[in-house]
Length: 242
Image 1 (cartoon, rainbow, N blue to C red):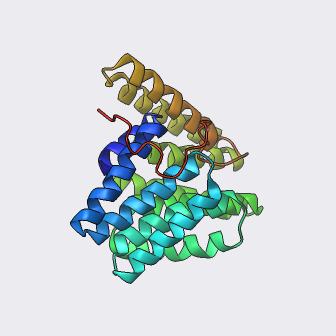
Image 2: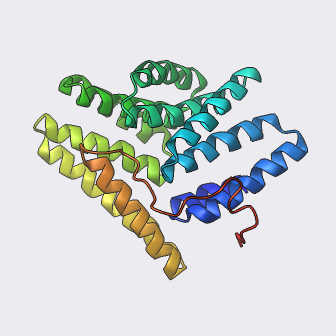
């Protein structure tokens, strides 16, 4: 159910993602799997951020970070913290930078290249907002290099490569920006073409296109919000996710 939640999120199906994440939480609690419960909470918070329920997302993510620290689950801590750092960075909270810097070091120590690259990317965007163009470019290039070694989900690639392209343009490397942006668009197209369901393919295309526009833009949150009706507590718990 945790994997289903991640998949539904990536193809732009937030209601089904919520249904799956609630089921994952119930199963983790029933089995007494505290690590899975903590990771499920972190991804639940990420979903809440996607639908712009930021106050609730922050509460859930802070609780997830605390739970991971309590059971010394550093992988989960790094994951929950990058989600929380994303929320705080997009909100312009001064706590974000220090949190992301510490989490970069934690991810590096744990060998979590994807999480390290995401932390560096968010720090690059914060540095750009603060007027530190050269430093922002250096962080983005570092993130890109790490991600290419470790790889990760397509959505992560879009954010990391898109940010690097944005900052290459800032320093005048237009050709370099076009090169990695073109590679990214071709990869997105290949992944989309492998989806058999026409409806899911269309939803995936829409979700990834929206994310790419956000990553390549200097304005607004890097992760676009999904406009759906507010979900009550426990929403989607009984939805079909077949």
